[in-house]
Length: 271
Image (tube, rainbow, N blue to C red):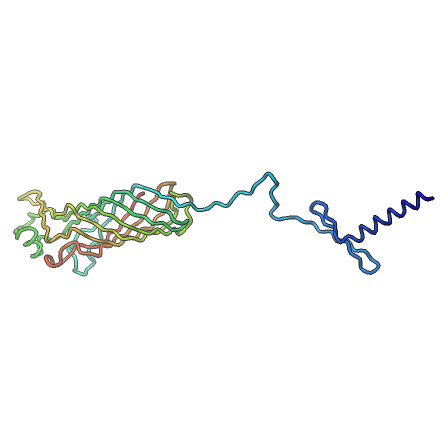
């Protein structure tokens, strides 16, 4: 009888102890016990962390951070010079035969995922094919020495210059880049300075064949232009861009010649 009494008292003590506890946690389960009058209420809470916590031996991967890098690329391009559109401020040229060729290197410093600074150093060749510059009195007198051409003597008349050019530009990525080389879609805004080391007018006539005329007073050696490029990445490390270059300085000395060369060139560039 004494043993039964002792067992009953132990069970009673354990029950009272459990009821008296406010909460008990087992793994992700938490049991909350409280008294409400004569009733005992039990709440079960499941603790399911989201996202799941890594184990003691597991570490979560850190998010990728942008790393500033530098890219050096070679590029080449060809452009077509737009003729004067009826304003009379420029010498008349043949648009399809007046071209510009560029070849050089490009240096790009990637500052963020959407912004870069860049520079170029290049060789630029310009070929302006005139229609009737030999008939213009000031041009004929200063550049050609006042020569008189009769009939169909003049077969070809061009102005050419071989330039060393450098530019600075900012690049904005309209769409995020897939990698450090592939631009996908971007726009460049910049300025370019040209030094015309070799510049001359060339005539091809029936009487004298080909002859070059150089005039340092009439042809300015330094020029500056604004540049806009819109490009996209076709393959990793390969970009193609459409560019427009507008020269805002005068190629010809306005004190010597009354008209200038057309300033706008539009073309395609490969990087």
